[in-house]
Amino acid sequence: MNSFELEILIKMANRGDINSSFLVGKYYADNHEYGLAQKYLKPYADKGISNFQAVLGMAYFNQGKIDIAKKYYILAADNGDAFSQNNLAYIYEMESEVDLAEKYWIMAANNGVGEAPYNLGFLFFKEGDYTKSKKYHELAAKKGDRRSIKYLGKIALISSEF
Image 1: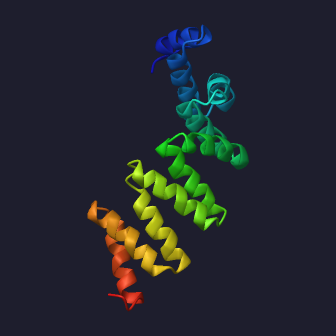
Image 2: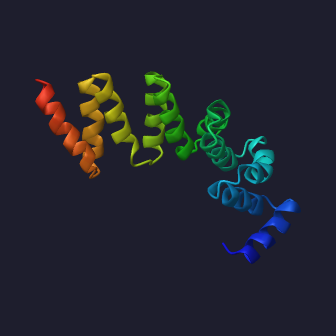
Image 3: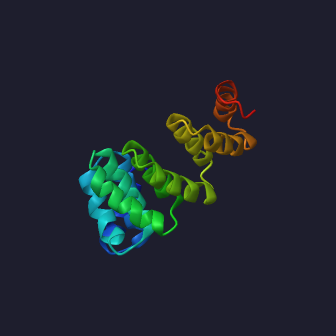
């Protein structure tokens, strides 16, 4: 987006145009201008609009404000936002909340996030649960994820299930 387009979108956003507010807020978030991103995203995120919540969650996460990011990711994830489900699962994995990571990665996988089955397989591989790891890596491998094919080989070497 060039500066002229941004200027027009800002004027429209300042007049209350929701689509322009999202585009401006996302532009600022993508360019690490988080204060400006929050100005355009937070009012709509706080009204329950999931795509605003998702991008605002990302902005907070990128600032290292994990608790606030999690708040907005949970709101968006519970409204069906697959991006937020996937990112929230990463946060729960970082916090060693395996059950919650699994829950949100399953939701993300069911909503079409292609990397979610691999993420689940990797999570359970790290946890030493090779049965669950195999299950999710097989799903990812069927979709062509080469990383999962490699992990299936590792599981075969470790586990006697094969």
